[in-house]
Image 1 (cartoon, rainbow, N blue to C red):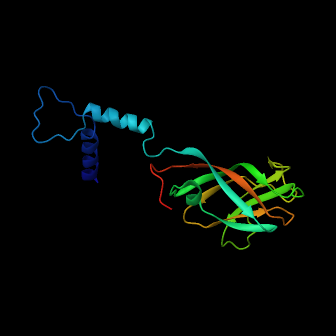
Image 2: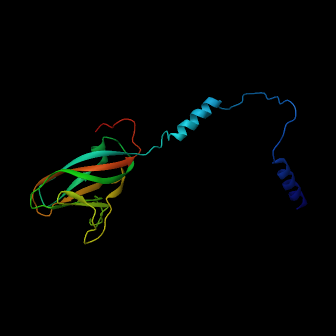
Image 3: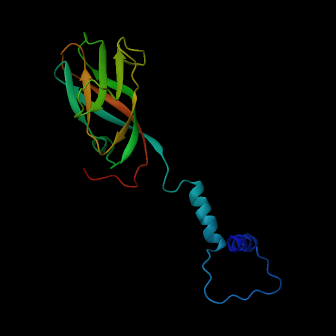
Length: 184
């Protein structure tokens, strides 16, 4: 026990700072970045060199022929970027071409093979051609969802009338975008 106490005491005494009086001679290579290299690293970290999230806007044209129609949703097809994951936001709807009787549209996003399919990731509605953020009578849904390249998504359009139509969905996508677009 005394030997253990002695070793611990010496370890604490030697673990403190060491001070050198006089000249210090060192032989061999010293591996240390220059001040310029350190300043460049600081600038790169401050600018968020490789971890910068940004939000970009993309359009997706959607058309349908029946009351409820499902479409494959693939972020690569929309953005032309191979994105691993992102936050996707239903941003706006434009170029609405629907039957005059179809005063409401409902657009939902869900996982393709999920059972039951009524589990929605995100949902938006239009009322009189305007994107609505009102609560729906059967629940409240978010107009954002988290996208992962590893999963398959389905976009469902419900016009309530069964008439053909088309719209342009505008998505705001927040992600780490690669420098170059991918080849489709």
